[in-house]
Amino acid sequence: MGFRDFLIVGCRLCLVGATALTLPAFAQGQYKAARTPDGHPDFQGFWENNIATPLQRPQQIADRPTLTDAEVEKMRQKANEMFTGKSDAVFFDGFYPAVLDNVLGLRQGFKSSDGGTGDYGSEWNDERAWENRTSLITDPPNGRIPALKPEAIEARAAARRALPQGISAKNRPLGERCITYGSPQLTAGYQSYYEIVETPNTVLIMLEMFHDARIVKMDGHHPSANVQGWLGDSIGHWEGDTLVVDTTNYRPRAFQSTSSDKLHIIERFTRQDASTLRYEITVDDPDTYTRPWSLMIPLQHSEKPVYEYACHEGNYAMNGILAGAVADEAKRATSK
Image (tube, rainbow, N blue to C red; front, side, top):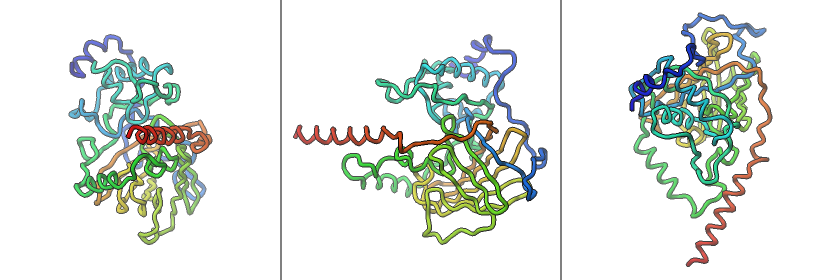
């Protein structure tokens, strides 16, 4: 059953007025933001990224850059039915495909990848905001991350071959080790809040996840290429009312676990209206992707502060993963 066929059958239950987030038309200079004492637009405060829209457009609707208001309302209703706090949590970009598959009748409900023991309950998830777009990616037009270059694919394979036998703390993912979820962080719906603080010479962008704190130097220059960090090195300038942030000097694998040290990120922050900060990102990594790609996240103003994210203190999963690996190794040794 196609999306439109399902909509015709199911939309008899739709509410008259959709409550989905509708992004207003954007034009430079359309909205005049409040000013800081030094005259620049005031972005300070807390912002949330709880958008339902996935980073990449699902293949089931590959020919649909946008959905109608009625289709979005059907998705929203299905999400409310599925995630009541009693079901498994679904994190980040797993949310939209799970709802879409249920709307299309391809599956019922949602089970975490560990369907046996279950996962967090969905009360851990923030309520998602809905819009008509089917991907955050705005370029390429297909809404998909460009293909990896052959050398990048081979580098990933070589890294896997070089891993020591068994599981160690050093070969677990960065997020699992409470190091970083990457910069810029593209996750939504869970610990995806920001705090922005502006001064005349610097802008602080702090992420709730792991408290990654990025210092954007408004009068600086990038260091030499051998100075690298997980968050890179950021310098900024103003283009009218838009803050433009240029970031280089990343460590390999700092972004999406695939990037190289040639990664170059351009971010643009613009107040779209009183409650929306338009966050545009362009990713250029000539050693990894076959072409640059771009996306836009509509950050929403939040009255909720960013609380402590004590990842290391509560990282019981790492103990369990490593203990399980040791147990598996011992089991293999006794079976020989």
